Image (cartoon, rainbow, N blue to C red; front, top):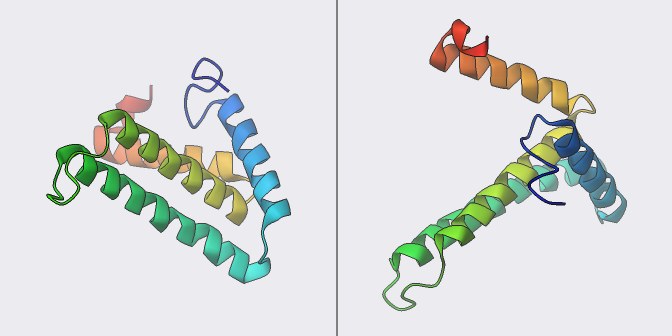
Length: 118
């Protein structure tokens, strides 16, 4: 899939991809039920850690390693966080798209004012 086909987390193609990833992961998970759900959510922490590692790497913050990443690496890791979060949300509810859209509208209205959504 290319960026042309998936423009935002609220686009239909993005949600088709989330559903496909969820279906694939659900069929491959070694742990189901509550444990599987908790591990799916915990995966988000792992992905956030990879963002931190990439930022440290792009800034050369670790003198032992030096510069090990690029800003493009950081972008990719941030995308992995978003994808992982959306798949985790889909794991919690089959209505993930509606839940996300409603929440995004609330956050946008709260932050930018109700007229921002018009």
